[in-house]
Length: 397
Image 1: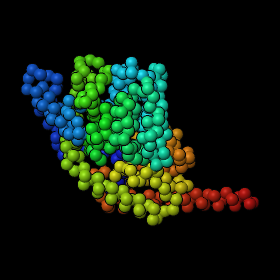
Image 2: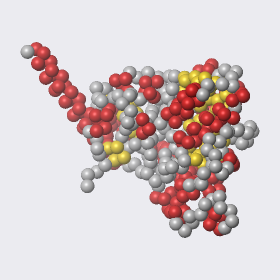
Image 3: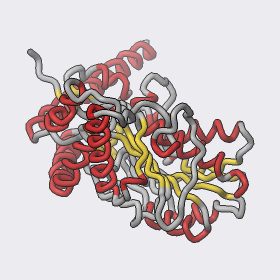
Image 4: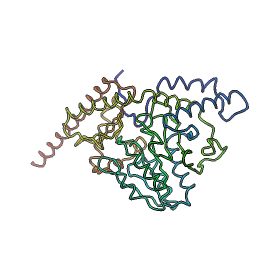
């Protein structure tokens, strides 16, 4: 069987076998509904959910009562943004965000814009980071909420959210953070970052798909949200619906593993990323990193290859799973809005590839992938030169 290497861990990650082991009983003998409080099947499920809630909260530096389980970060973002907008409409009519946010933030904000809210979208610097002073300058007396992601899903750039959270707290503005990519990979503490609302998900940290959480601050100041899903009053009335007990158990287990192993894993994965970049840069000309390399997730490498169409390169690499950008936008022919926002031309954006490294990668995986990319980039460039030479020869005739 031909070898293949998966390098798209910003899209999703494989479930850790330890996580799967924790989940399996809740598909079988422990199948109860966590809201059924009249018998032991429900009690067992409720106990498992409570344990997972503590595990998620511990990784975020939160209180378990501040964790609301959802179906994933997209739902968490929608609940945070739409729920806060509805609850705090009397405070103002203005929202602030960044042009490099995931569409799970930008699209709900466009929805709110159609509902009469004013939305300011700030461009980051060429390194992908937003200067907190720019956020401060955008905040108005009628600003109700600002939303800035912790780490970008395409270029991996980490934002200075602690400074942003502090200035939002100073101005009395709610601060929401999409932490789906950073949570469990680098330190994310809701108090250190002065975050009021934070969206996280399980499947980016070797947990199951279809489960996530929204952190909703209850200490120091109590954040109110208008529920976006009604029908039973689950999750303190903020998110109705029967809880996904196996998924929640898996999310909790993934958080516990991340808490124990994150420090060492981050260093190891960062070394692999640097090894990949070094091999590509040594063998190929015209390789450039998109966004800050210093302030970046350890497992992210987004690079452009001069003269190469990234979609053609991806097609030429059936044995190396990489992407041209966000999984949610992979069917869109337009160049990445993230890369355009940091100042790349459409041609440069279309020549960019995202590599996502994670827990189960080895040096051998990285060397294999680097070799295949080098091989195909060289082949595509040589083909382009032959075509160019042929065209110029025909013109001379």
